[in-house]
Length: 278
Image 1 (spheres, rainbow, N blue to C red):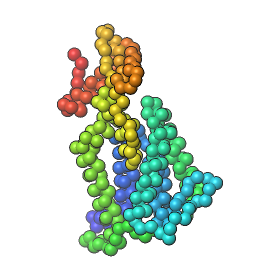
Image 2 (cartoon, helix red, strand yellow):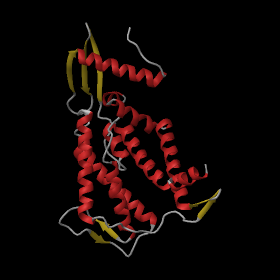
Image 3 (cartoon, rainbow, N blue to C red):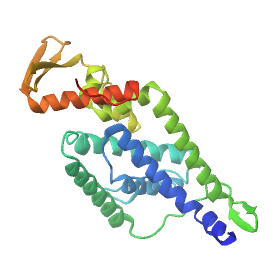
């Protein structure tokens, strides 16, 4: 039992790293429906950016330019972490605009391949720019040792694990109980349903990636029309603007299945039960 406890405590740091990456993966999936395999490479870029900022250098991943740009003699934890998060948020927004947004209606396999391509690109750029040389920075958490039973554990491992758990609880509460969390889950589940509810998926995606967007509800409305014999049409109308545009799609059996899936997801979300068409 003592040996098991030793390995459990020694693995706190590595476990907290994997937990934080998993947390980022889940947040992205809950907000966009995309399993972002590039999460690890984005975290790697953020870590290098933070490390160089602590040394007063700005990391530049673009080949052909200097690897770093001198900013100061060194930054403290708060400004370095804030600037690194801001830079990473800009990178995330660019990836969303260039890669993920154009492919949000693509098959899941295509989106996964795109995410893997981003991973290869970012990892390759970092490898080419800095190689395998680690960037050493001062510790964030206190490294005072704690004695748990007969085992000595470094305090930074404990605080790191506690921080990850606390962040996970806060995010879980935000997604479950706040209006933004409900909107985010709705937009990830069905973009059409989000538009019907007056929610802008683009604005939600921008906020998730750490920035803001001026996108507002564009006055778009969608409804389904029953034609019988398993035939359903979709009416897509824009109410705002100088020209009010409407489009009729279908009818088809595919839209009938789409309508059934939309109705089932709403019933399950709102009433907590499955829906069966009668």
